[in-house]
Structure formats: C-alpha cells, structure tokens
Length: 307
Ligand SMILES: Nc1ncnc2c1ncn2[C@@H]1O[C@H](COP(=O)(O)OP(=O)(O)O)[C@@H](O)[C@H]1O
Ligand SMILES: [Mg+2]
Image (cartoon, rainbow, N blue to C red; front, top):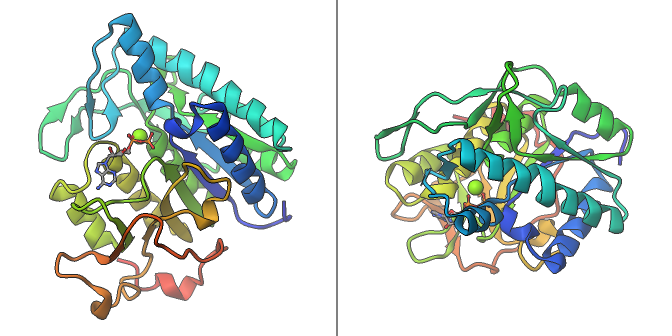
C-alpha cells in the first residue's frame, strides 16, 4: 500500500464468490489492487441468498435490483452475507496474502443506514422495500481509513443497522457507490458477472457518459441489478470519484484487464465522432476491450466539464 494514495472501492458481485476457484481468483485480484492503493471491498451475495430463500420456500421479489425484504428474507440475507459469504472471502483473501478484516455497514464508522423510503421504480411504480437500508450521512468513514492505514483490507458485507438497531439489507452497489463518494475514492470498480453494461445485442458498451447512463435506466436497456449499479455510479460521479468502471470479474485474477464499461467523467470525453446513433459510445464484444492500467485520480481539469 502506498502511504497517501487515494482509496479504491471494489464492489464484488456475489456470483464471483460462490465457488472456491472464483474466490481464489478474486482474492488474487484484491491483492493486486491492495498492493498499490488503500482498498475497501464491498460485496453482495445475491444468488446464494436466492438459493437459500428457495430452499426455505420464501418468496422472492426485487425491483431494479433491490430486494424486497420481509423479516424472513432479512434473516436469510444477514446469515448468508454477513456470515458465510463474508467470512469465506476474508479467508480466501488471507490465503492470497491479504490481511483482510470482515465488517458490515453496522460496524462503527462504516456507514449510517436508514430504512429506505418507498422506492419509485424505473417503470414509475411505488414499492415498499421492507427492511432495506439506504446509506446516509456525509462523514468520512474513519474506521475504513484507519484499517487501510494499518495495511489491512476492509471487506464489507452489505448489511447495515438503523439507529434503533434494526438490521437492514443494503444493496451492495448502493453501499459501494456511497462509500466511494464519502471516501473521496480515486476509483470505484464494480466487478460482476457481465462484461459491464451490455447493449440490446449483448455487446459491452465501452463507455457511457451521464446522459447515456440516465437514458439506459429510463428506456429499460439497463434493468434489474444493473439499475442499482448505474445509480451507484451516478452517486460516485457526482462526488467526483476519479475513475468508475463496471467490469466482469469472472475467470480473472486481474480486474484491470477485465472487459467492461467505463463511466465517462467528462462530457467531452465521449466525442461526437465516437457516438453511435443510439447515443452510446463504442460498443464492442465482451472481451474485445483493451483496458488501460488502473488510474489514480484523474486530473481535476477533466471534471470541470462534468455534467
Ligand atoms: N444492460 C444490461 N447490461 C448488463 N446486465 C444487465 C443489463 N440489464 C440488466 N442486467 C442484469 O443485471 C445483472 C447484474 O446485477 P445483479 O444481478 O444485481 O448482480 P450483482 O450481484 O453483481 O450485483 C446482470 O446479471 C443482468 O442480468
Ligand atoms: Mg446487485
């Protein structure tokens, strides 16, 4: 870890963490990132939760990737995410030589979380999400800073608690975007099961500016869990996070060379000549993308044009 380098927030989709091979690869990827920057990891565990809910016969409902969470669902979410998934990832990181510390957003100084207001879905319907938490507050997450300064890698399961002690299920992308904003992160890197944001033909959209991102949500080209990711990217973008990518994390131990979508920080970066008719820039097939080595903070001047 370099002393005063700005932090990277890495969000891991649960499907990357289900199998030992995947965890081993991801643990190596964590080591690579943590070797050059302070690193905070946030993870979900959606599919393992789905499997456990199905095994218990608990019905499932989600809106824009946010899980409608009743008491029975919350119980499963907490046990799977803060229990098995988090601890297995911490253990895999340790094997890879990473000194990881498992946490949730309920731990001191990670994030204040309040019960989410009824949610207006991308299709306009209003949904009571139940025991779902919304990360709030603007304070710096001092605990995460301190752990990073000590050469440790915090691995945060996306569970929080409100100020009355009620546990709440927080979407992991939402938490990652929020923490990236509050940490003033150099980078938000969201690794999941798809090669970034895909177009209607299933090809990776190489880059998106804020207008394209908004349109993808509004016109339904981004659905389900991708909506939560894009909204998280938007929060990080608004907070001036220096680099934001959504990439595939499957079958790789180096997320810097993963195919995916870069969220453009400046309206000028997506030049008109690159623009396709549909408003997206540079589509390409998953895996076709040459990715620049990880960046530090982008020059401030670039952000002067940020919309
Ligand atoms: N345009 C899109 N590009 C990529 N994935 C999309 C898109 N629209 C919807 N999705 C869905 O979003 C999912 C990713 O969100 P999610 O299931 O919550 O994964 P994670 O566990 O990584 O948060 C993809 O697996 C895919 O099914
Ligand atoms: Mg998700």
